[in-house]
Length: 270
Ligand code: ADP
View 1 (cartoon, rainbow, N blue to C red):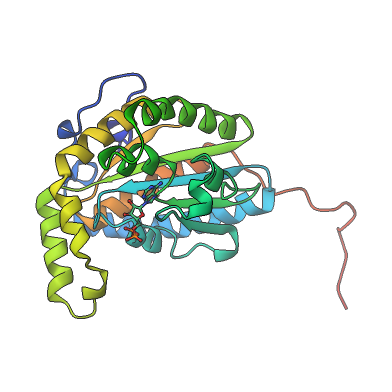
View 2: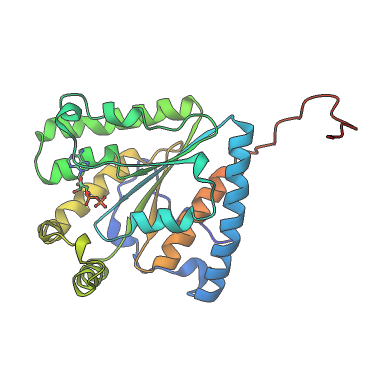
């Protein structure tokens, strides 16, 4: 199996995104067919593991997805979880905060969406926006967002200490791949609705977002809540790596089906 460590952000170390190639395919030597076969196997395995998680009812799993526009958060969720029973999975998409949310601390809206036992929660964007878009747009003073790295580490440690397995994936694309995807949205009538002129203003801030991601990932990748930088220029490879990170995390939980009630031997239903 391919080595996921290469994609993990080392806790405590300075982190330079330019050392992570968004078009890396090294786990599979670029063998797309082999990769696609593995995606099928992963799908079956993930379905089994999710059922086990639900049946055992002991662990909770939180997958955090962050990315620049068009990197494919929605599509990753759709593909990686396509065989998983929707009953055991909850997706929360974090948008621009409402007035009520803004009137509270930034973790207020987040905590209630964390998973319960037996559940997988997926955050499509997350509390990280509060050190990313908030920083890039100067929505709060620097001294205030800067303190948030520490809050986030403590918040995530709380979740882990109380039994949550936390997996954080940054879907990493190149500005060239983003340009292609934005253009494709404009050119395809069925996708044009996804395009907003504001996307271009955000694109122009690529260097600021890169700096914000670099600092955020380096400050909050911890042994218990690591960040993975997922090469995302190729969609199939992105899905493969996210699937693999998830499977590895679930397998490490050593889950078992609960014991059945006693004296079921010989029970026949008539
Ligand atoms: P997506 O791009 O995730 O598919 P949208 O197009 O609705 O979904 O974008 C959601 C928007 O909400 C993004 O522009 C994002 O930056 C913004 N957003 C999310 N969280 C916050 C936050 N805490 N503060 C400000 N803006 C936020």
